[in-house]
Image 1 (spheres, rainbow, N blue to C red):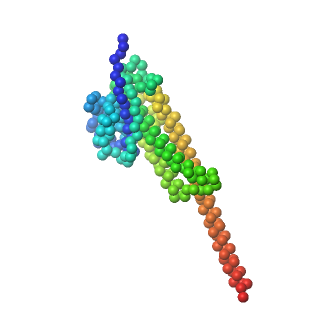
Image 2: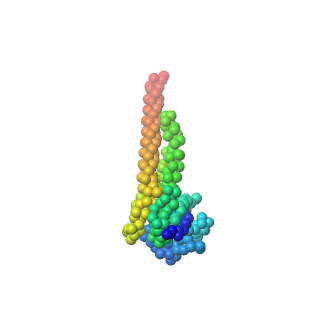
Image 3: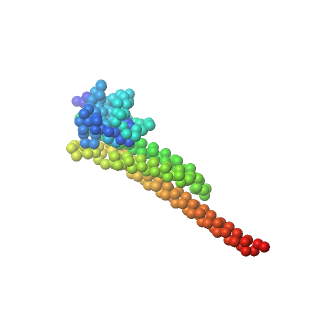
Length: 261
């Protein structure tokens, strides 16, 4: 007998550095690590996360964006352009997992299953945002590195330090709010969903991307330390040269005074 299935779109928006969910808790139940915003017009569901993400299931992008606009008063450090990721869910599948096309297969639409999918896709959106941020930082470091390969330091310290500090601080703030490689707390109450989440995490490469970001951040730290060390060395040499020239000038002046008639 063929099971009746339903296909639903999933939209994940990373809206800000943080979302204050305390004022929203009256709208729906609080699940471990997620806040359900209840049903949307047309039967869709929405989930919000304290680390600035909104996920809708069974809603259009326009409905999702309208809900995001309602959340704007509760956002802290909103992103200029929200990060957007999408997926498809089939409800009523015989076996749970992800098919070859990347469609998520679920047996039913229980809140726990939907929240698990929502959290996984929201984490993927966070990782995409961090990947783009660190990629921009590395791109901006390419110019001083090119100068360095030609034997020159092309970017002054006052420009290097804010650049590195911004990237490291943003990554640190995000890592403090959400561990993208960790298993959701929801699995403590629903251990039977662990295989499903493992499949989702593998599909979106959550652990691998988290490790890659850590490697990029370490690379940025090494580059910045090298540039700063070279800059300080150049400053020290210029200072030493200035001192030598000053002493030479004093000696020359003294000698001239002694031999002058």
